[in-house]
Length: 160
Image (cartoon, rainbow, N blue to C red):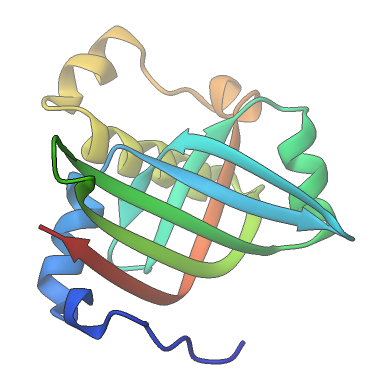
């Protein structure tokens, strides 16, 4: 993939710590997938695994998104922090991250368990409450479909 040159360079966020903070703060990502010439876009909540440089998602065991993932593992994700529309200025403040990478279906039970843990750590204020209410068992993991987006490239920008 060619390197993208951001048209409004003054809006680019280059600090890796700031980008990581945006990813940590986000709760859902919009994922763009494609098979042949047919695009598909879906919003999913996620967990960020900074050590593996990946995002994890869970989804139903059957469905359109899985058909697209199987047809083409290339994916793009957007995480947006909406800072609000500015009335009477025809402007919108935001910070956003765009991620490119390969998305795959996680089959390994140990990695599924890890993915659930990553998502709970990312999304829950107190993950232990959820773990006690709904313990993750091998049986529940076998019924759960997990996706992993391995991050290849990231760009981020802001208008604040």
